[in-house]
Length: 206
Image (cartoon, rainbow, N blue to C red; front, side, top):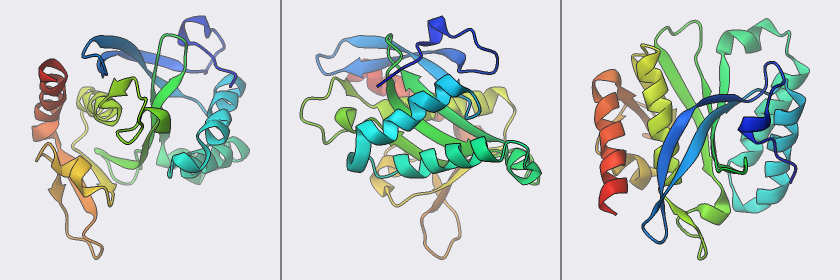
């Protein structure tokens, strides 16, 4: 897969470096990874993201949904309806620029203060079911960074639809919202820091 390490990216409007975070390794050591934002209209970012769909294939249930959105935004960059939704694609990358986890969020102009998490997907070769994985807790680490950014941006809450109940119930900080499917959840700004602390404590105690 052709990748675009963040430290070599100088093209305008390409992958943005947003910070770093530690992730837990299988041997209980820690690795520092980059928290980045990909831009669908940037050729290098697009190439890297398209390759994920091929590399992860049927092992990652949500990657096709994420890549479909990337393709849509690339072909409708001037579509005001797409722009008004403020799509974002966040990821965690290792030192070689390899994507470890990716998420798609939206920040609709018509719902100020809200972030919607559309999809979050861990590299299937690093997921909790992978026998030879190197890392633990990549999904939670990425979610913590997304929450941290929402906190810095003054957001009120993050909402999501997900059937992965154990993942969201693990912290006890995501509340269930009234919804016909009973799969709608949210975390409010009053719990943002608590979730960040929860993830950090897990890293330190694992």
